[in-house]
Length: 136
Image (tube, rainbow, N blue to C red; front, side):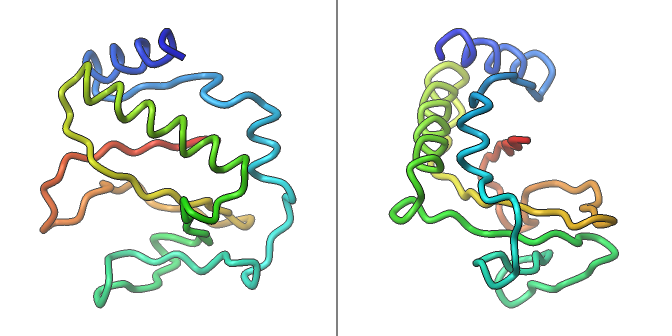
C-alpha cells in the first residue's frame, strides 16, 4: 500500500487530485456492493443537498440514493475499506501535513437517468480541510 499511497500523495501535491487503480481489489469491491439490487427500504435514502435544517431534495441537482456507513456496524468488507481509508488519511497527514481528522462514508446508487451535478464537497460555513474519495 505504501507505493499506492505515495502515488496518491504525489498526485495530490502536484495537481490537486489523484486517481488510483487497485485501492480495492475487484473481489473487495464485489463484497461491498453485493447484493447489487437495492430498495429504498434497504437503508438507502433519497439523497439531498445542504445540511441539517437546510437539507432539501432537488432531483434537478441530485437524483441518487445514499446509505451512510456506520463504522461500528459495518460489514467486514466495508470495515476493510474504512480501515484502508483511515490508513490513507494518516499517511496523507504525515506526508502532506493535511490535518485530516475524521471522515464520513456512504454508498451511493444512481438509478438510470439520474445524476449529481458538479459541486464542491464543502459547506459555506465549514472551513475544515476536506478530501473527497470516490470508489467506483
